[in-house]
Length: 425
Ligand SMILES: [Zn+2]
Image (cartoon, rainbow, N blue to C red; front, side, top):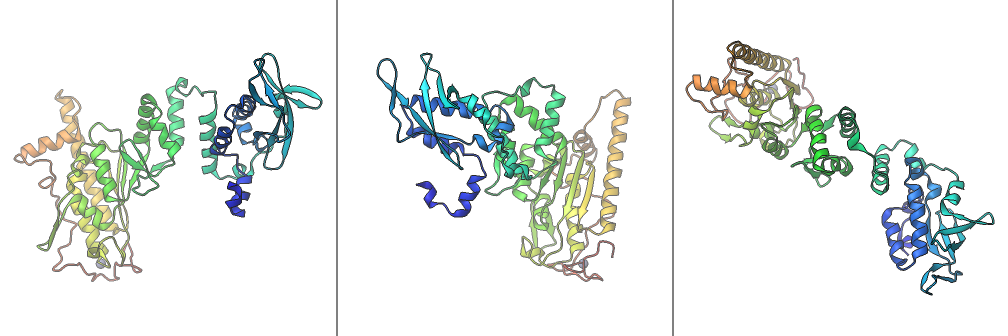
């Protein structure tokens, strides 16, 4: 009935895929009270999920239902427990199989003139691997493997593996870059959104211990790529002090960056810095990339449509400095080479100062200080300026370019706008 509503495409697609679990459950519901049919189906399913190879074997894509010609089978008390013949339905054929139930309740089927256990028959079926999975659609492979894990009665003793091996597996599972993503496809996990397949993030939810181990790897070794201001805020709110997050790449729009870090457009307008951006001070990052978006005529805000890229990149870097100083910062994307070099050199010098301060502390027996402590001490010396970023470390040699009017029109030669952008010009 359902089939009749499907288009040809869907039907042929279905032929190359294993029967979905939902479909099986649907059939199982109709079999309430059919003890024998259920038992056969269970044996097929169990056999199929014994190994991933069998799970991929489309020959085992079998659904069982009573034949129209069957007579009822009853137990010793006369209660009906099933039928004498069942169809083994495969997408290529429908095969009637005679069934017997032994005194020990064991169900056997007639095959080559003998009643044999269902698995004996299944073992004779050819191994036909679903080409969908062989031809390299890895997302389907993941899906199938996940389904296999879910239905497999054998539980893989993952937690008994040495932690180095588990960490490697987690590492492969997540891929190199995590992109938290705010769309409907995103899944909620660990307090933020991850643009990942559900089964991957499910690792974090499996149980507390595994979740902790997996998120440790997630934060220690993977780069978090953040392209949206709401995600940046959520990430900073959730992953500040004590988090394992080490690799962060901020790739916001011009508008997003200036709203995150805060910026004053002369007397025209002021973006107040995000109240979460201070968390950057408490992070122990191994890499912080600031990825500047390309010049565009259609940016996220009319403020930045077709403006001078050099000026806006300068603003972004200037706005960022109080918050990102002390981290190993790398500037990427559409930024003039001289701006990138100046900013990165400034960041290196800053880190050297912190390093010197740490060495001093060690020599004085004060223990290993943190970057946050360095700035707290520095601010005390400078007269109690708080870490809200407003007063913190205004650099010498400002990168920001004063502009007489807004928006900042481009008078560069060549124009540093769409189409004529050149990082070295
Ligand atoms: Zn320009």
